[in-house]
Image (cartoon, rainbow, N blue to C red; front, side, top):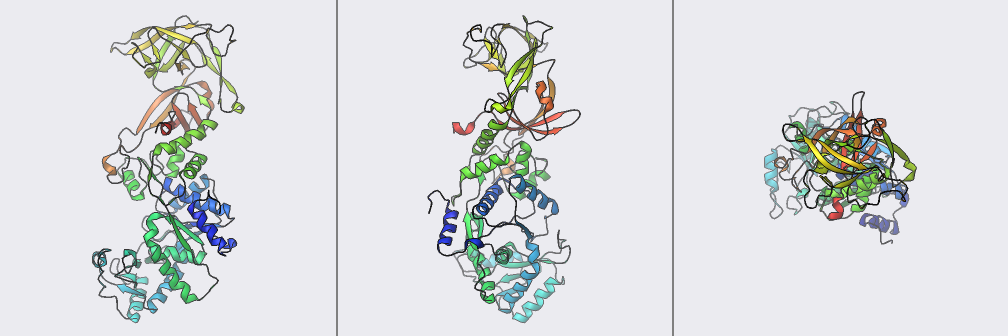
Length: 554
């Protein structure tokens, strides 16, 4: 067996060695359609679909639509869109609701075998009677109710004669089990709500625990892969399936094998759908696809590529060890990809006017720049250079300070792809703010000139810039982490970063006028940006990631 296989691949390979027919290997991705997919789902999607490719096995997209509260077709469509964005295509689309009738029939079977009963106690009493893993639970007063009475009451539940919360159907397993999941778990509850597919056909709905394994069994999923929090539920998963499998007495039926892997937890973010919904309701974020949260659609709006997300998950690896991955590792992989595919352009975010005193007022010079030095196929472009240009305010200090290598009075810097300049004075407004910086340029220092005639100076700093009369305004959304704490899950509402989004107007070189929606760019010395929207009046860019690689520093 190859040593570079992750532990799930080793399990599957061992099953094949022991005689499991490779043609019967089958996987599934079973999201609940009550919200958008997030970065944690990328790991599960990647794992199931990549295994499907490896073993040439079908992969089901099964929607776990067992709770009509909060589920909708909108979420279903968003889930499909996200999976396709990641570059995967499911073989069969199915729904847990496809099997509601079969699940109901199997529930009747368990009642008839005295392995399930209707309990009329409240949720609070049921929870109290379960106790804890260190002491035995208390049997429900209704646990030994006659089979005929259970069948009668369950039929009344199904037909809508009983109210929500009045009773539930529970499996009869072991109230003394050290595994709390085995202490007579709930199989059905009454919910008189409209289902997105079934309408008002059903008013009882199966729980996830009862549905999940049976759907795997019906669809003959060979390896049911789920996150580590389901490890304690594996005995219940197996118990339910065995009740059906034994009664069918069909030896050719595959019994699914549940395998757990660690969740993908990232720093400075939350992935709980309930908490994300809370952020939306409180208007802290705009929607499920807000670029400040790590839903797949939010990442897509921010400019993350499917390649970067898959590379990230691949390098995180598939293990059984839970830990928190620093978000800078995710940023490393999008930066790594965009460095290869994004054209370099010059945009000034916080401009101050710079006047080159010894440059002609009537001259416009077109300097040449590579669009992406990483790939010569990107070609070159011409950038207009003139007497009046914008540079970043942060790139100038009137009086030079230690470790400040940019422009100051009496100091020289190079303007990227153009000339070396030297600042000599400033003009300020009535508030004492710098209005203009005046400088001179060295006409023999133009970038790209013949090395024999070029001025030989060692310049420590190169600044980006745009020509004032040739530049145009663009709207830019700058993003910081939404949460100030590395692990915000416990008290997420108390560590909101109120400066997580900043909308500004920057000034761009003319080349960006040809930008199209969905294109990526590197704003030189600043970061990578994604063209979200283009209208007649403006172009909107979302910041994807800064230019600085924080992961290497860690």
